[in-house]
Structures are given as structure tokens and as C-alpha cells.
Length: 92
Image (cartoon, rainbow, N blue to C red):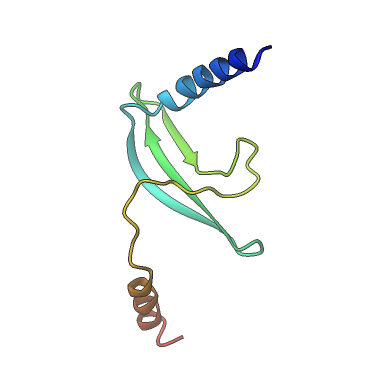
């Protein structure tokens, strides 16, 4: 397969795969914590256009070798969250 053919096929695959989320509704978010590895796995519960419910995890790759990051959102104020956590945990 030529490089151009491979790029075209992968582009179409990605459109078909991620296109399933067009029109979907995010209904909840959980964060799975792997304390041993120090990793945080964001998991969105979504309802697709056809009513199918899915759990969508952000991963570094399609093999699930580690958690991923979603770019394009405003970042929360980490220092404020850290201060709030200290207050909630009694200064820990």
C-alpha cells in the first residue's frame, strides 16, 4: 500500500471512528485512578445519537498503554483546587 493510500485509509478510519461522537451527549464523567502508576483515566459516559450508551476513555493510544489528555478546554486553576483540597482535608 502506498503512503498516500495508507494516509487516506487512516483518515477515513478516524472520521468513521470519531464521527460516532457527532451529536452524542456527555451524561457523566468519572476519573479512574491507578494509584500504583500515578495515572488518572478520564472516562465519559455518553449517549450516542441512536440512544446507545457508551463509556469513552481517553488513552494515549488505541492499545490503552496509558491515560490521555483532551486538548481544547479551559484549564481549571490548579492552585485554587489544591488550596480547596487542603481545607477539605484539614490542612493535610
